[in-house]
Length: 143
Length: 364
Image (cartoon, rainbow over all chains, first blue to last red; front, side, top):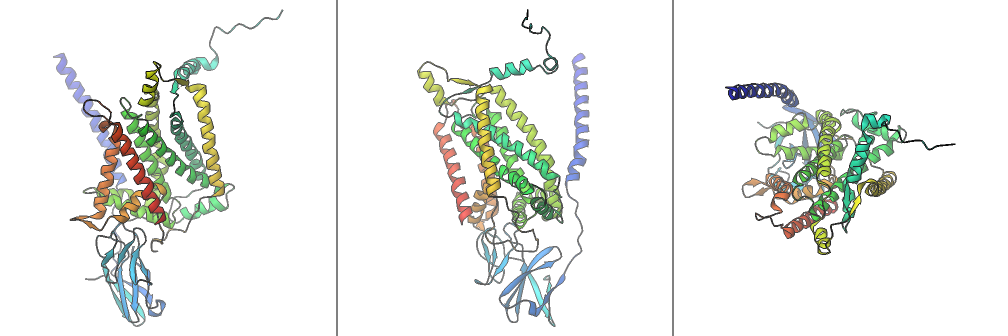
């Protein structure tokens, strides 16, 4: 009888302690998890004027909160890709000498179609569409 | 006629309140083994000394540092250019962080080669490895705080590695970044880790580590025990206080001298302010203690069989860490015999990997 009573009290105390600990920790863990902040959906951005980018050069353009690499491969030819390396998230750049896209962090190389040429990137770069409207360059998401 | 005063039969004011006699008695009993490897015993204390310098200089930097993406870089620039001795305090903080990690690595490898992790000191080893992990976390979180280009991309790479962890990776990366990508929220969060969470965890683990060292005493390597045993003698001991303590103080002075020299002659640079819309600059590389995994990740191809190379690399680092932490368990066989050659071989191999890949990561 005495042993059962002790056992019951032990369970009640242990259970109460565990429950109160869980009730403290649960909100703390939820608090540490950052909330999803909705961002305005961007489908198209202006990347400046045609004459601002010489042939065989590239630049990073803000596409909402994402960096996009715009490359003017020839006088009338433009390409755009996500500038986020598919390996470990660094921002890539256009190399004029080799006419390739390079990630300085781990030496990943992509060609001007966004395909991986060498190095550790596991996937090609996501392509974007480029249109020239008058003398304005417009980058948009592909459907 | 003058008479000498009798010693007071009642304890002094402090003695009554603190019990200094018991502390003195405790110190008088603590000894340190004297043998050819005694030099390596100093590195634990040197690491602790550099940690204290980190706390002191970090507290000073807190008086001016502002943890937001808009102000962090400018506040460090202000510290370095406008605040009196600001460049020195910041330089000492950065250099002592690096020296502390270097000293911790020496301490760890000396524990391995002197076999100081053996029974009953397994928990001392685990707490020490935990402290080294916390020191690396201090380095990683503190690296971002000046909000410069190199630290920005180092954090992008580091948190993206966390994202590659199967199942929980995405949530883990979001937790570390304070959002979907590295930004102002990450900086604020890393600041919180750096000045509150990590110091708290380090203090607790450090107390446990020191308590375990006190409980088990300093370990004598087996070869010293055998050498003296053949002469029918125990390993000679030196009193911790004042003999070892005074020598340790000299080691601290040497560390302080090195630190002062490096901080004054090679002041820590600030670099260029982080721009999330600029490409990663050529020649980018992390701090020296992350160079080996950094170079390994460069070498791993995009795919190994059907798996992404990044995931295989991460798995490899994880297994290597688990194998190293579990050292006290595989260092003896089932019959209780020490696998001395295995341990030495593993220590040399790990040291060779870290040294060679760090050098390659730096130069290539």
